[in-house]
Structure formats: structure tokens, C-alpha cells
Amino acid sequence: MSKNLKVFAPATVANVACGFDVLGFALHSPGDELHITFNDSGTLVLHNETPYELPLSPEKNVTAVALQAMLDALQSRQGFTVTFLSKIMPGSGVGSSAASAAAGVFGANELLGRPFTRRQLVAFAMQGERAASGSAHADNVAPALMGGFTLIRSYTPLDVVPIPSPPVFATVVHPQIEVRTSDSRKILRQEVPIKKAVEQWGNVAGLVAGLFTNDYDLISRSLHDVIVEPVRALLIPEFYVIKQAAIDAGALGCSISGSGPSIFALSSDEATAHKVAQAMRRGFDHVGIENHTFVSPVNKEGVRIKG
Ligand code: HSE
Image (cartoon, rainbow, N blue to C red; front, side, top):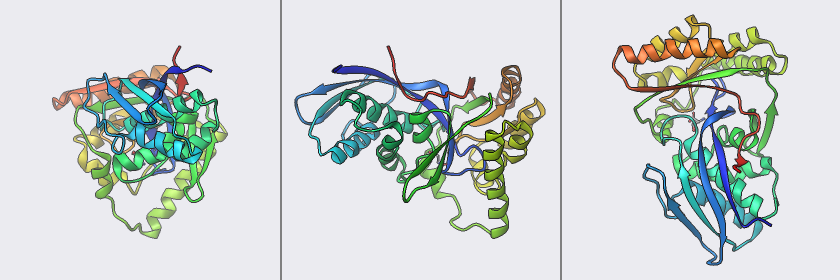
């Protein structure tokens, strides 16, 4: 059995407009890379070689919290040493903490001879999200672990459903500002008028049906969030200008990626996704906000061992 591994876990786009806390998909890059190995100390030892400041105490570090949840389920006292090699920028809205949690539990599971399936690992990785944001949501960790689009049909009990999709290309624009998930969750209203709920679940069902049946028009008609986006848009300068620019450039739809500040758009082909990238980038350039823009197909594989 291999005693050490390098693992890559991809960035993810959660919510996918209408599916707050229940829908997400994986990207090819960016992602987190870490090295994981057994140690004989019976503890979790963490080293950080990334440019970002990361909490390294096992109770605060998302990878360690997720890994500990997995070891507790196995009643194992195996020690691990984890070295963080590269990281998605924290607070960017593309699942930075989810990638760290997914990489840790996946790597440890491989080293231990795979006691769990990828789907079972979601429950442990979610505990890392709880440590990071105060909420154990799974809409980033599920696609990071399983690849493709995933639906969290239920949290209690946890029911994760992989969703097939036609080729779609994501354009992601990350303005260089930080929005903490815990902050952008606190501003959400706790009650939803029934009229808005009806619109939202119509769109969630439409999006899932469109992905299953390769119906790009239905996907496009369904990529609307009438509940969360209107509140969080206030945290992202120029959000509506950039969204309109993406749609005008041919995107199927555009919304906030996870809890922001990144904005994502989906396109049915790569050339359009690049055109959309230019249009979205111009929106931030115009007002002098530094931004990082990239295009990625959906990553169907999810977290993997990096050779
Ligand atoms: N569903 C989560 C949210 C994703 O929107 O707060 C961010 O981690």
C-alpha cells in the first residue's frame, strides 16, 4: 500500500444560480494540491507551503477537521502529515475550503485502502465547511469529490445525486476582493415568500431537467436565482453590469459563484465562453477593479491522485 500521495482537488461553482446549498459543479482548474502521508504520532500534523495564511491547528483547519471526522467514523488513531502545496485563493467563491477538505479525506481514504466511496466521503468533508463558515453545506464538497454536477437532494439524511450534463463551459471572473462565506450567509433573509419559492423551485427542477436532457434552452431559461442573488449582489461591485455583459455575449446564464465574489457564466461551447470572459472582464476593467478570469469545462472526475 502506498504510504504517501499527492492529491489535486478542483475548484467548484456552488448554487449554480437557483440551487442555493443544493447544486454545484466541478471545474478543471484552479484547485488545491496537497501531499499526505502516514505518521506514527497518532495526530494530524499540518505544514503550509502556499502563499496564503492557513490556520494550522487541527481544530481550525478545514482539512484536519474533515479528516478527523473520517478517522472518528473508523475509530482509527492513525496519524497523518499533510503539506499544503498550492491553494485556491481563500474567500474567492470557487470552493477553496471545500477543495482542502475534499483533498484531505480523499487522500487519507486512498492511503487507508478505500474504506469509503467518494459519495460517503461527502459527509466528512462537509464538517470542514462547518469549521470554515459555520454551516455544513455540501454543494461544493460533493462536486469536488465526485466531479460533474451534483444535487444535494437532502441533508438529513444526506442524499447526494450525480447529475449528467451536456458539454458546458464555465467562465469565472474573480474580482480581487474577499467575501467571507460566513458573512455572505449572515445577510440572507431567513424567510422566503411563497411566490419567490415557487419561481425558485421551478428553476431548480428546470435546470436539472435541462442537464439530463441536454436541452440548452431549458438550462438557459432556468439559470435564475430570485432569492439569494438579489441580496448578495450588493456585495459585488458592478454585478448586474457584468451579468448583462455575459448574457449579451451569448452565455446561457450568469450568477454569483457560491457565496461570491466570483461571478460565473455558463456557455454551450468554448469559443462563446471565451467571448463571455472578455465581456465580463471588461466590466471590471472599466471601473478599475483588478480581476482574474478563466474558462473551464466541467470536470467530470473530481478529486484525483496527482502523479
Ligand atoms: N451554498 C454556499 C453558499 C456555497 O452560497 O453560501 C458557498 O460555500
